[in-house]
Image (cartoon, rainbow, N blue to C red; front, side):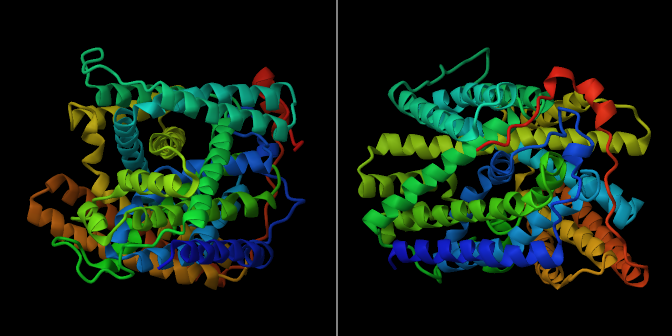
Length: 579
């Protein structure tokens, strides 16, 4: 199978989904209204609520939801063959992920920028909300603790990525100042920012930074984990326009350029896919394709984490309600293209089937390392880029996206802690809530592993928890649509499929954890399953009730900008809309 054919068909499918299906969703299901006031304007505070150019916001949303997951998931799942992974990524992007992300973004924007957890309280009930928040907190804990390990591992294994990864923060801060403080135009600033970022990649390739065996009494990996948590805590407290928005935007451009280089190399080299379409001789110990495929590939097909980002940060920055189609649905398209690139890199980046089988000798092998190795081989063959530079480009891409997901995850988990505090009647502020989040994440990382790898202890629960959360998010969206008498079938079908696959996978894991005597994961899995089933039951009751109640009209978010502006001061400059 020629990988170029796979790339062309896959790209055509997801772009057609954006052009046609997202238009149907925007017009007929969610009915986006350019005249509607968004929370970014009505509740503007210059910190979390900031009206943002849709291209910049797309960059934030896309890079925050992407992370390393759309690389890791497909790079592991191809052990079942490239065809199942390809079909789930392309069909999932069009009919599942885009609809889910756009729906969560729309629902939050219609409700004062509230998170999907808070929305469950209004539309499902107080019990459902409390259990929803438990699932969200656990998922974000998994993301923050595990991604710190993934990033630190890449920084140690690819020292040429250290300079571009940390140098990108300086580029992002300068970009934010130029756009918001000085009102410079977006296109020239983007060109300068991308040029600087790729200049840093060249510098990093020439001057790799490898830490000594001990840094402050810690191993290099543990040192990077500690630094990452401190960085994420500080970044989550800054106004979004200072670092989060410009960093995510410039990273989004960098990824699309990187994907363009990868796909360009595929077009030139047209490497043959050596992996089987359907692998009938999987290594011993590999679980069944159904249901594990649908939780192994989450980001890139559908992911509950996207709903947290869409309703947690992106909805608070939406300049116009109609921007939600580009930010939400096209953000999912971008992630689908990244997942497709990961499939091609890990199946066509090896010379022979034997080479591929030596990498995929057991389940959970491959991952980011296989993506970097296979992708750099294709880039070297197609465009003649040196193998070391190709590896630096791809490793930097993976690290930057994992880092954006991690610090956005810390900000989102801070929102969850504050919401939980409000429910319990405990007064908190963003500094205290952030401190709790960092301490819990770092405590897990170092408490369960002296070298900072403790975050991986609960990672096996991520796939099922993530997809259960996607189903719960769609349950809330379905209730809202029923209340408004909107078409609900485009939501109900994916909802039923995702919940079924995720629940089957969670039940299968129960047996695995029990047989292995892993009582921590067994207990957490039980908690997650019970919480999810309870929320689903509450949502089903809410759907039935919604059919019998009078139609709900859209509410206008009250304009609170006057008092907000008093507190915003100079930290809330007017957003630039020039391109």
